[in-house]
Image (tube, rainbow, N blue to C red; front, side, top):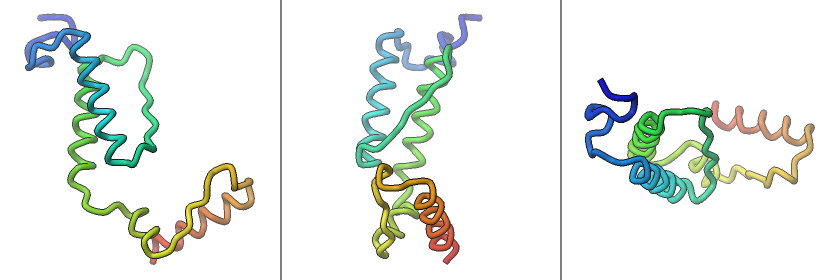
Length: 105
C-alpha cells in the first residue's frame, strides 16, 4: 500500500505533488470567482493534499449547484451588509439580530 495520498485510489489522475498544488489553487480560484472574491481558506498543518483537493472539489460542486444563496436573497430584498470596520461590538450584535430576524422571515 502506498503512502497516504499517493495511492492510485487517492490519486486517480496520477498527479505529482506540484500538479496537485496547481489543481488546488485552480479550485480555490473557481471558488473565489463564485463568491465574488471574498473567500477565506484555512487548512490544518500537515493536511493531506489529496484530502484538501477532494474537500475543495466537494465545496465547488455544492456551490456550483446553489442557484441563490440566502444572504444574496436578503441583500436583494434590501438587507444592508456594512463593512466590518464600520461595526463596533454593539452594532455587530444589533446587525446579527437583524440578520437572524430576516432569515427567520
